[in-house]
Length: 483
Image (cartoon, rainbow, N blue to C red; front, side):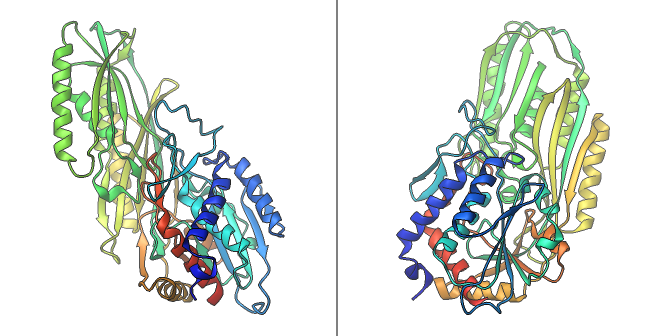
């Protein structure tokens, strides 16, 4: 009898996981704002009879005694992160600092109510772990580790005390996005924030319009970067460079590591030029639909009259901002040297905002190899200098070279085939994963990452197929039983 049957069947397993996920999702838990979820998680672990502890960063650890007869098994750390990227639907009223995610099951998927991203990355993996502990699946000595601020540079993992990792032979990370993959390596990343003071002048035109590009899918800058989706910031920058108009405002995107699916600008024109503006915007939208006909079927470009502002950007400011957005690299730079089907190096131009009188541009670079990172860093730094921008903030984390043939990976593969009848693929991924920093604190650990299917992570369309949840639970249960 496989683990899905031992746990009561697929429907019961799915319902149990969804219930755990709803509990984790009910409190705000964006990066840096995990306090409510942290407290809830501590209570969950206490109800399981455990004695969780929390460090100064907010990371949570709890030891789980082995089930009888498994006391001599090697120690396994099961690890995931609590925080989510809070993508918000414009006009939805969703406040990431105040609101939890409303979780729905619809059309065979777990999804949000459309106001925000779902946060299945990584709380769905955490929910499965809690569910299996409730079901008392047999296991050796376990250590549970839940980290904070993963989505902003693996910050929580970097502050974990090495003592929390000492004595463990294995670490299993639950932050994979694709069921049936055993991940044994991940990309390093650099989070870049560029700024430049804005220069203003009086407008020459008298009529103002908001030009809004929307309907893009956006998505995760690592997991979706190869899908050929539109970057709304770069597209709108291209249009603004061509328009015979002054720019009074320009913004878009969510953060460094989210592909921007929407951007807006306020432009000022001489009286009587509205018809020309609309014609050019209509033509540009048609160009975008042809360019992204398969990847982006729902693009919209609207023109709406607005009150004429008292100031507009100087021509030099406009050229500098649009130039930087276009000259920073966006997309796939190179494929992985060891796994040709995996992206090896990429960059994302993630956000433009106006903050305290300055234009702020946020970008994210991901690379598996240092030589590719050096080339991308040089291009970005050169583009910033040329546009008069300063690299105001930068943070980075290392890649995880990995080992595709360790005992943990082999156990995962055997468990997956035994539970599903399918073969598990071993690969690397083009995202940052916490084993890259946790492994350095205990180099003796064999590590792997695996997770349930998650689609469109970091976007309001984020969703997870319900049908795959029993298989993921069975995979973890089989691994815990046989490791």
